[in-house]
Image (cartoon, rainbow, N blue to C red; front, side, top):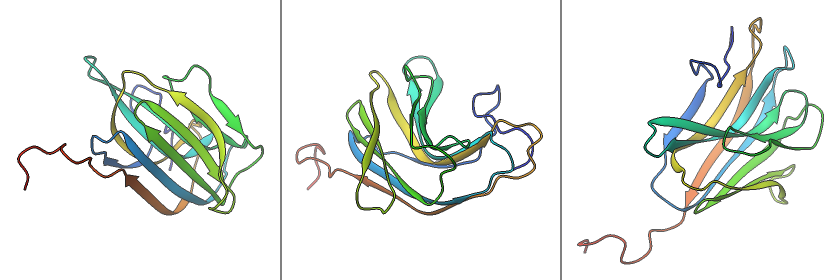
Length: 168
């Protein structure tokens, strides 16, 4: 990255790898953040959920990941308070978001097996449109931010019987 990549600015220039989510109320999104370079303390990288505001034609994002040099953080305009966990520069960590209807759990693991909850959030009235990976940088003078994710998985609950009408 070079220049400012502030996801909150007038223009969203923060790099993202997004995929459209199926209208599914139960899902798990997971990645391993393998490494992240620091040329400054003004960056964040991890998982992102993009919601559409009903009847407003606007989007709202919730981000979970390694935050500046201050550990892990869950943040977004829909949240009452950003929630942090751990401390210091975080790399080589697994991140997971579990969604069930309008409740979301944000978890991390240092080994990919034992998970700790950072926060659970209730986001009523939001429609999940896409999810994926992101990185952003607030520093205008930043010359480079390198982030390596070694995997990403999205697992959705099976479609309940009787949901699809007329399919044989």
